[in-house]
Image 1 (cartoon, rainbow over the protein chains, first blue to last red):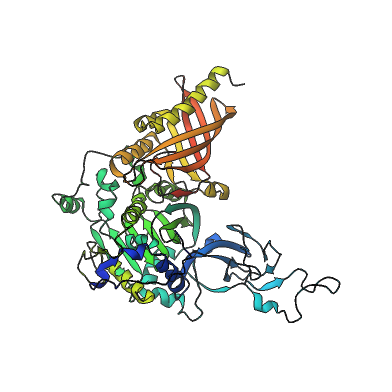
Image 2: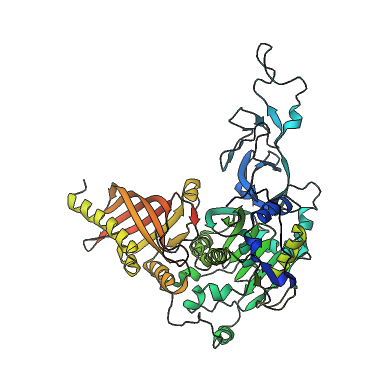
Length: 416
Length: 161
């Protein structure tokens, strides 16, 4: 699929029902994808780009993306983070060719233009020519040829970057409710435990919907019900910020009896009692937070999901690649002061999430099932009225309100 | 000095492992491991950075069995077949009856679902870093560490590598 389409968007009208109907072209149209890159990822958003713990030392760097634009995040000796587009100001080549590392200068290999940690141009070979011949004109100003710089701010160890110079502060962008829940997981220094990458053949917004969707949790993910583990998908709720772009989905344990009752007789294929885990150590979970949740799934618009599922902690970075493809980068973490036993629990419970996760592998599959079915009938629409038509925070999990909230904000930014 | 019989038995185990998975005989898969065992599928990215997370991690026969039960009964995924190509099997050392064995692998995944039926992709490329022991004269995996060069998993991973 051509991702760099120059076509103008020629949309049909959005369905009159509004955010309860999502036309399938929103997941398909290359022109919409291109416009998202400009208005969302390169627009007035703070995009998650990584954890401070990934680049802990002076001159450490990480190459990543905002939307599909390649960027680099660096750390200077004062511990301040900078970011720039990973494209040489000379002829447009990738400057930083390694995914991570440590260097004081970033040099493009093509003609050795050299930049400092902020992206300022500090070196140009043969700038003055040789023996009076060649070189740049006398009015050449290196300061005019720095890399495209990004704004970078951090919140409790999470690094965000923005193309917008006039955007609100990161704290204001997150808002008090989202900060409150991020604080639950990020009030202690974190340590990266590993990465997992999943390449999903579907539009990125199908995943944005998925993480705002508590309806599917015990219906698509059959692991707990198959093994007769009454995990309590029934207690919880969704909390949105004022703009509705972010969402915090939380689930907590209720009594087994209540949960069995909730599942029985509801025409749910998932209720099975005949299987048990041969090794239940997988689910040995240690209490570690004041507010106990089995699931903390927090979506920060546009590209971050923060998760705690039992004792697994991870960020999930959504990286759109094409209208019908995105990468999901899981960064598993623990805390610096974890003891060996807790560390071992986190490593074992990583079986639950990631590309082979017992209760997460289906998310990518579900997104792909949608993408495969919407190749035609682009003006047809999905139906999002579970829990009503509102976009309010809810103290239950039987709702799609956060999906509607996402689309309301999205439509405003995209003018769709 | 590894005897020819031992070498043959180890190679037979490596090949049996492949056919077990590729013939969808997953219920037999845990039986190829020793009573005390470790199976880890590690993205090469983590191996290179010395980070401990594996995307599949089983440190008991029971956990291997649970992976199979989940595959059969719980997890939802596009139906598919694997073909493992395993080569360059090398016994690198022996320590008190524990044989360190390494090999390269390629797994081709062929879709068997309604939409992509019959489409084959190079799904995963990597290496095995195994420790093999003999229990009652039969070779078993004490450890099977799958170092996955293809760190970026296409769609999902449910069938063991």
